[in-house]
Amino acid sequence: MTGENTITDDIQNNIEKYKAGMQIIFEGARAETGQTPKEIIWTKNKAKLYHYEPSIEKRFPVPILLVYALINRPYVLDLIPGNSLVEHLVNNGFDVFMLDWGIPGDEDSNLTFENYVLDYLPRAVKKVLRTSKAEEITLLGYCMGGTMTAMYAALFPGKPLRNLILLTAPIDFSQKNTGLYGLWTSEKFFNPDHMVEAFRNIPGELIDTGNRMAKPVTNYVGSYVTMWDRILQGKS
Image 1 (cartoon, rainbow, N blue to C red):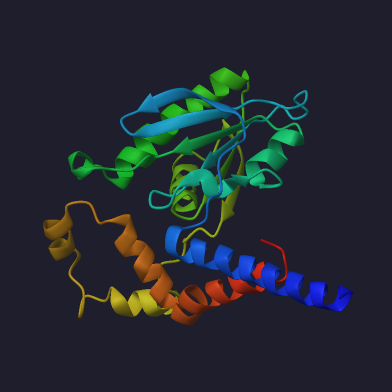
Image 2 (image 1 turned 135 degrees about the vertical axis):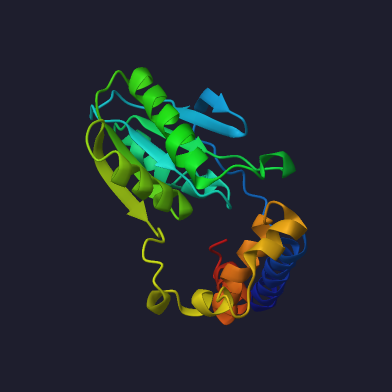
């Protein structure tokens, strides 16, 4: 009887795992992201500057400003408790800020890199320095946010910039290093003006699809294989 109960329990357990997996596929994961406590200390148009509440006494005098990309959402750096870069930094005594660009609408189609790098970013830096009562700052740019912080650092290499950290940031746009992107966006096949005329603002979903198509097997198949593997191993 014990053996039969064990088999029944295993079957029921696997059924529940498959139900959980199918629910994620059809409804999406139900994770509450961005849980590290924070407050908005500055806004400009759609952009918001967050200041994360300290969990311990500040150990480092130089604040960190996280600059995220224009396309994806910044909760990637603050996923869930125990799996969050923001939480890790705060818990280790850093004074942490994040610049969230927001989701642009049609009314923002006239904004350029000049606006972001020469207006938004310097204003955010000044607000961070005033709030943290600091004279220097560390900029941590992620993805396109790293590209923009690199532009800022090149234009303003002295104080208040103390450190520049770039994560997955596109920097070298020479044709030999752009791979499929270089082919797809070649003037022979692609006219960006036509895209702007059609969309005004290029949808983030369209760019995300392009990113995924650069490695379609990894992004469209591999992620689901990994998901099912974690679920069946009880790691979900």
